[in-house]
Length: 402
Ligand SMILES: *Cc1c(COP(=O)(O)O)cnc(C)c1O
Image 1 (cartoon, rainbow, N blue to C red):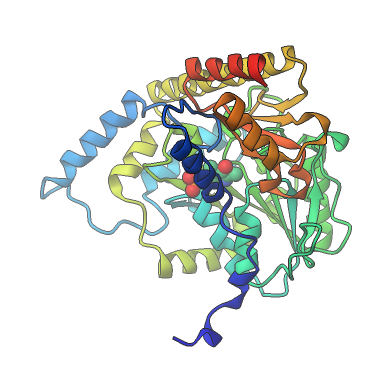
Image 2 (cartoon, rainbow, N blue to C red; image 1 turned 60 degrees about the horizontal axis):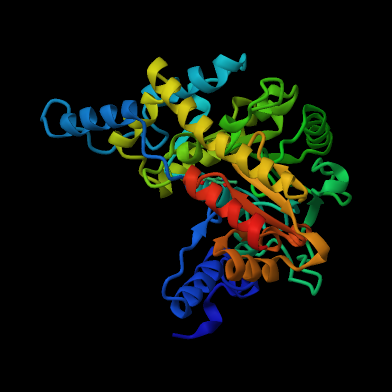
């Protein structure tokens, strides 16, 4: 085949996907250390099994699929009403936010949604992304040709970066150049920090005044422990005319393997809402029935209690990581309202070098901060998704050997 008609924007992607690089390094280490006992505090995947309420709902739904009267074929592309209504009740009404079930678009993942949403916009729309952040926002825009080229300093020429560092308490300033699309992620992956009400209001005002759109990723909203912190962009006055929200059951309820998420596009954004609906109807055929029943079950009284219990377990682990690293004299951020701890690496060591050193001395794996953006250099991400006792063991090793 002739290369001249392939999408050459893919050539602009910086190397291989972060986690493949890391997986390769671990494999190499295991290859040369037969008895390696590696503790993984790296990849952002859950480890606690599904809650009993979810399993019960799935079993019931499976049984329905085996009976002629209750069998279901294609469902609505937007999701079944029962789950859209449960989401509105459990996530929005419960927090005093008005939401129409018709504004909820159920999907098989937030990764696909945040990556696909950019196709609603023209090629010359300018984007702003937090730095550091989940790499999908940037990479999906690189593939679409919206970012310009990668420069020596690690920045793409046409992207506006919203630096989120200890210096600004992880509350980024407004974009300096005009932009049309603003990605925000709160609680943030990888820093584990939360955007304040003031910061969000500033961005909402900017978006409304400049005709920009906020793409708000709230994948970790359920980890916020302080009820006064904003859980949804729609808690901010003015957000309904300028913001789309992405939510996922992956981290909320351990659905990383089950696959279910949703995107919220309020009626006020009628044009975009109609476009997304058209897009989903053309390119997506809905989430399977069993999974949607599973998602619905999270919002029963018992389901919610069990879900909170699992999250509490992860947050207890996050607390241990924070405490132990702080006690050992390190500076850490996050881990209070998110399952991520953002570890400041001492002595200006590069985060990928620190990765190698941590693996070699402690057989502990984390994620180099620079993989999430230039401002992530000098930091390291640990996650609280691992087994509690194994995480404690990792911290013992860090204290003794690092
Ligand atoms: C894990 C994660 C998601 C969820 O992705 P799914 O495709 O729903 O599993 C979305 N955004 C961020 C920032 C995440 O870390």
